[in-house]
Length: 443
Ligand SMILES: *Cc1c(COP(=O)(O)O)cnc(C)c1O
Image (cartoon, rainbow, N blue to C red; front, top):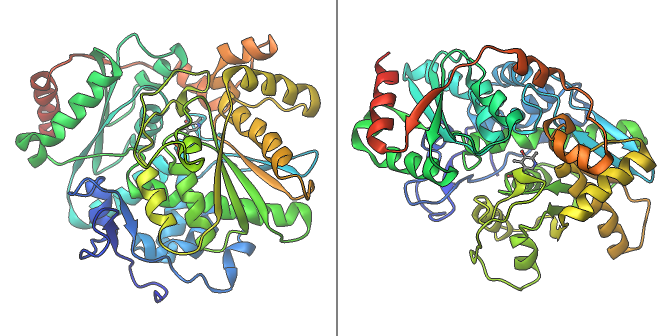
């Protein structure tokens, strides 16, 4: 048992009995030195389920996160009130279906929540030690925009984003190249794999290591912990909407499985979800694994789909999910996969039947809601909470394909469209990246 407020330590999934490191060390390192992922050694005892009477996600965070992130209640509240300064509503659809909309942040995807919270946590931590870091990310789409936006204007961290020039969608590119203070966006003459390789090489480079490089991808535990908050917030809203507290099922559109892992952790803090169902597209590793059709870590190459933020063949958080599953009682975790035709068909059906237009990722989730209910039969009225991970305006081509008309506007995206642009072309070589990063570190 952990005393309230005493800081929790973090250990690697690959060395669970090693000496724990602090949250600060786990956040700055990202990946553990042995190649594993950090997990807290314990989750706090949350007294009296205080989060059930919270009036905002920031109040939920203040009730459950202080000992995990090593900050006081008031500091946690300040961090999260500033990070989640947009609505996180639960929308009720017919037949006891509820949608948790996580896309009202500046880049219109749920990654804003984790990235913005992490950026503010990092500023607090670095302010104490007086250190400066450069966050280096390779992106094929959503992550880079969310991270760049989250860290823009940070006092202690600057950001370098690498993306494959000419190989991402228009909407995504406009989000990445919007000019932001402290953010440098490099258009790399190469593929996404080249960008990822450059990032790996940069972390292995001794000169760059000394200049203070860090990461903000979804393996970072500082992006994961904030995601617990919205699961608990959703239950708090469900109780308001339905007038009772009862078990429910959560459906999570999944790729790297960070979101699902945060949901499993939320159940250990009191979330009443008895079952979490991962909703996948054709990249169905977890489905095959849970069916016993493939062994642990028998990953495959990713395939392209219409829900491209979930096109992940080797989910990086699988190792964490596996470690959590092995550490005592937890919720039932299941997975179902939906192909592109069923995705667009669900987008159209959702508009027709419910007057609700989901993005393609959310549509994969809503289709899984139907298939899951058909499979389990039983209590049709048990509430299902589906996570909505992006706004449809991010995927105008898929929306046109599915329903033949344009998505509604998202204010944040519209603002990014009008923003001034700044982008630096970069040759796909470590030498070119090294000199660009060292220039940034000395600027
Ligand atoms: C990143 C992303 C996902 C997948 O989330 P994971 O935490 O990687 O499983 C789903 N939908 C959207 C819109 C995303 O951007």
